[in-house]
Image 1 (cartoon, rainbow, N blue to C red):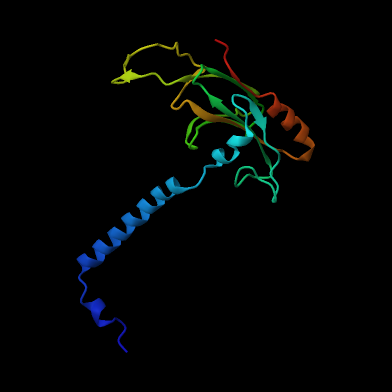
Image 2 (image 1 turned 90 degrees about the horizontal axis):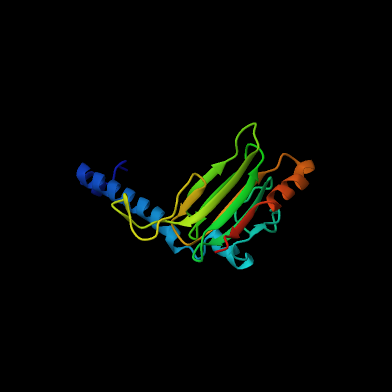
Length: 191
């Protein structure tokens, strides 16, 4: 019995190369497009449980109960669903040690801003979320201008999520982590 079938011997190297490249392109496109068909993002799953512009500490993840998928047992999370349609939103949080972070996400789950905790230093975060300004060629502002400072973050969409993530160092620190997460705030600024 021959090792290589006759029809395979008749294929040219160009045909094999085109087939390999086409297969690679189809694979990459399927990988990039497939998430767009997901029924709901992780944030959309918990959106109904969150009130607007208020920080909520999620319960600890257990094998039987996880509000967000793939949460680690040593990780605690506080989430705020913000809406800047009516005006800026002020966010404050404390990142007490390495492993903690504050991230800003769009409603579809795209991360656009993150602050990691500093090593060997308690880090207090105070941000104001403001709408992205309309720009003409990126340099000339049109319409109402917002005074941007180091504490203001331009948000690409009106609705999104603030996530404060804390890492546990053990069960004896559970109460401290819970209290630190409860101190995080996400409040609509009064006009």
